Image (cartoon, rainbow, N blue to C red; front, top):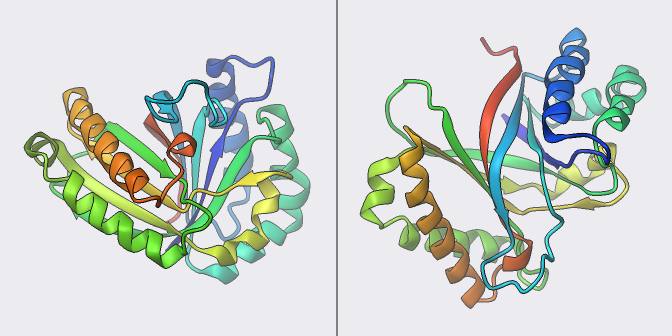
Length: 243
């Protein structure tokens, strides 16, 4: 499967809770009414997060994000037909004005790879790390450097002990033809890692991993650290046609 991922910020005037209630119950109902080519739709409701890096003297990353949307499709044709369908254009898309700051969204098509998984029990503690590459760095160079930095950063024994699942998603430029659906000014994050832990205690080891990973990539000029961010989330499955 391929995945469209979007990091959404709530529109002015909404509380975080009002935003989450609307996207889960109202926007989710609209999506379920006509799934089209969507095979799975997950909302990742943000609980906490950090934007930029510790050394920033002021925020350069757009602050904040309230939810991370994941839309899964069998293939590119299914994605294109969904986003071009009249229901998406006239109903699902326009509903975003009720909850989203359309001027500050990020979206990208991703190729997802399961890096590591142990056990089958449901995991409630999830972190999502979004990485912005330096625009002067070739995409394949970025992916290779990310591999190496992950291998080094993940050697922490506490992290290895706490991690239960790791999914890595790589940016696919071909998806840019449909990301305008999410708004007029779209930011792209070329690398996204989703990591699951058995309990909240494991999140402290993620923080050590995250700092080490971003520091290595920053030192090598691979990423723009002030534009990277991570969030702790609660997964809410809106639609799953694969079951």
